[in-house]
Length: 277
Length: 247
Image 1 (cartoon, each protein chain N blue to C red):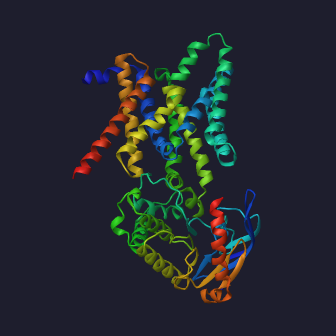
Image 2: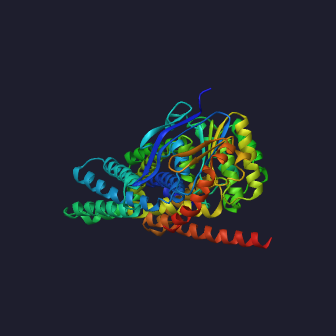
Image 3: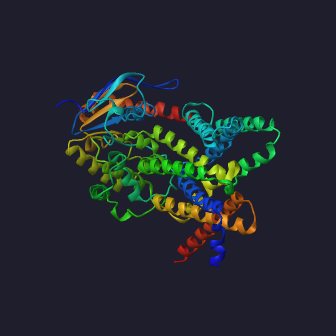
């Protein structure tokens, strides 16, 4: 058993993969708490898809992946926030238009390249084993930024998530906090793209937090539990994918999905017990 | 002493609707000002504009000598008429009341003993101590209203704005709300409160203002009652109130 747990660590790329998986799992699940409570799941999905255009442009021009994807993701996040506040179109319409457009643009550019199919797949579904030493540095740095800003804004994010109008009246800047949150979510998505890919990152943003939501009725415990779930899913999924020779991103998300249904079941059991006593 | 709140010729628009059209009034420190008027007369708009949630289209709002958005965080506490919060949000009564402390703490200060004391005091004032660990979804309407007022008190604001806090609450809630308002007024706060309950106005307020997009009458509750604006408003509420709900 110990042997099986240690075995993957003989490879440097697996060590990097585990570190990345834990960071991504914890970060997505933490930000996921806000995504769930502010009902931003669709926004997360939209930002991830839109960042594809940035990835392709960066790829074709030979510039840094994080720079390309990051710029497009942040611009999309701010754009969505702006449309949400000012626009006369509904938010889901705006996201639907913006993100499919950007995604299609990415595919359009990619399809004009001869070798597109192989690379396209790794962008869409992620390839955590391909995370290099430089990527790790970038991921750790971005994770630190997101972690520090989230800690500093913890109370503002909490109050404006629950009651933005009253928070605003009491002197907080609910609009600014929302924009910062959208940028944080965009950065989280960028960090996660290499690990789980564009299609699956939305699941990591939503599923662990949704599972935690079933089991607790206070905010801070929900966030802590969600982060724990995120880490467990990432590590568990990675081990499983190592021994089952399955795609890592998909396996991580599947573990999270199973955990979610277990949480729903756990809640039902808890309610049933509460009703009896 | 100068007035705590000065509203001059205030005009506020929503899209094409003129919600306030030249309203002027003042409120002093240690004074409870009741705001009455028919539905759609601009009571909520007035409070929201004083809270800095709506920009004036013309005229001005001056709170403690400044524009509302320029005041230090935590200065104004506002309790809206309908709390449009998600009741399944993971928060207990304690958590909600504790949020009242957040604006003054800013980014760097810790939530300390002082803050916990303020939360406990606010809970005690609204007789909610025993409910402090309860999830917000498990509260009655009156208890929810008390929790939000407790949050406003815990904020230790310098101005309190209440939008029809007594609508649809039980007598016990109304009683404890009135005590709280009188206590804060006694401590020197200006309290502005929209209400439709004209009968008990003199128990609640030092001054009463009747508005219908602009100020119709202002004075002590007795003066306003004698002026006849009172009766005119009730008449108005009766006829126009029903028409508005049909829209």
